[in-house]
Image (cartoon, rainbow, N blue to C red; front, side, top):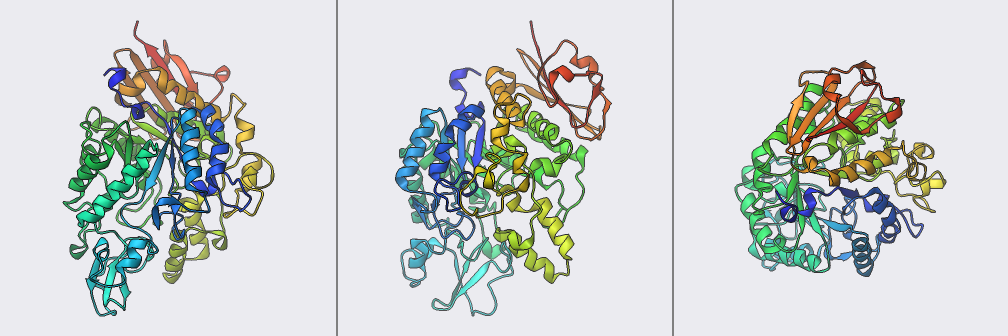
Amino acid sequence: MTAQKTPWWKQAVIYQIYPRSFCDSNGDGIGDIPGIISKLDYLKTLGIDAIWLSPVFRSPQDDNGYDIADYRDIDPIFGTLEGMDELIREARERGIRIIMDLVLNHSSDEHRWFREAKKSRDNPYHDYYIWRDGDGVTPPNDLKAGFGGSAWEWVPELGQYYFHQFSVKQPDLNWDNPKLREELYDMINWWADRGIGGFRLDVVDHLGKDPDRGIMKCAPTLHPYVREMSQAAFRRDDLVTVGEAWSADIEQAKLYSNPDGSELSMVFQFEHMKIDQIPGKEKWDMVPIDFVELKKIFTRWQRALYGKGWNSLFWENHDLPRSVSRFADDGRYRVESAKMLAILLHGMQGTPYVYQGEELGMTNYAFRVEDCRDIEILNMVRERRAKGWSEEQILDAIYRKGRDNARTPMQWDDSQNAGFTTGEPWLLVNPNYTEINAADQVGREDSVFSCYRELIRLRKEYTVFLDGEYEPLLEDDKRIFAYRRSNGEGSLLVVANFSGETIKNPLLAEERGSRLLVGSYAATDEDPSVLRPYEAKMLLSQNR
């Protein structure tokens, strides 16, 4: 593997921004594009290579921008198209690419296409969506929408139902219509011409569906559609493409991320994110994390895609709770825990994604129901109350798994509203911003931020991060996560204590002769015979 033939995204670290919660430039309480531009130097200091930008398209914001009303315009709450061009340009000047979040499974019901589609069955845009005849009483079948209720909505003036897998204001697009697909590909190329560095594809596995047979995703048409889209829109310059695919197993991921480039660069798979969920149940139906199984999941994906695909590496995104609150200790050992999770993930093969605030060790927030803003949470509250859940159970579910945990405003400093806005923030700021904020961490060598910055730097320095083969260690240990990655230049040893106890280090002998690259405790405090609470080490031994 030569440097010339290695795609840039294989050696990159990508940073996700949730625009409405990142930085507000005008005091309206909502983050915006000018706010992002003002923080580009912060991101350059961190060392990231690209920004994945959650949707900023024109939208009624029923699902915080994942309901797009115009794919070729920017929503006024975020800025203007000219401002977007400026963001692309300013980021490029700092060596940072912009990755846009494309929602191609559905549009907003306020999109021009859908407004036309509702006018008559003969309208050219009617077939851009999925319709079935009916009587307004009994839906075509019993499919349920992801945010609750039936997946079918009655339109009396047409005598038909339309299909929506998510909100009723998010009608599914009919990918079986070639004119629709052509229009979407044209739009993608339009953005690429403006200098976009790539695309994240929302719920890409839902593009192939057969609602008449109860198939919501991964129908036989899925991969042909993805290959067609790749051929028509992605095979140019050096675009990166990543699909969100909650259904992806290893064999599916090999198709999506085939090294021949026929589909996408990589996909987000979520097997490790279902580790605390009762199989076959909803995300709110939780079980304790099986730590040994968590290790097995990472090992399976690292080994199976080696040379046959590419992994996306992540603990967090806008749909997930904060990792330090979910997988480790967000109290006494928050700093050590946050560093441990970072070290463990960034030593693996794949492209790491850092979600805004993750690099600071931001935590979950104990919301009251009335302070939540997420449509998924509010639907859950309504449904679970009807099932007899107590308020205590509901609040516990929100704290542990609610999406608003990830959407609290970015904590920039210890001033009012964490420096996010001079106005009233759209969502409550986590009160711990006086202790956890960027201004406090950027200049400190022992901070979570500095740990992330060093990991990002190291990934560019040593080839073992790129192509080292993965070997799990201590596979049945219930407290230690350890692995080795090796290539012709040397080997990388990563060992992490996932407990709040000090334990003996069973890999002490393997550490001898290795150099500590980064750890969750200060190097001057190192005691190689033990692993302290939530201690992680990354060590390198180079072949002479």
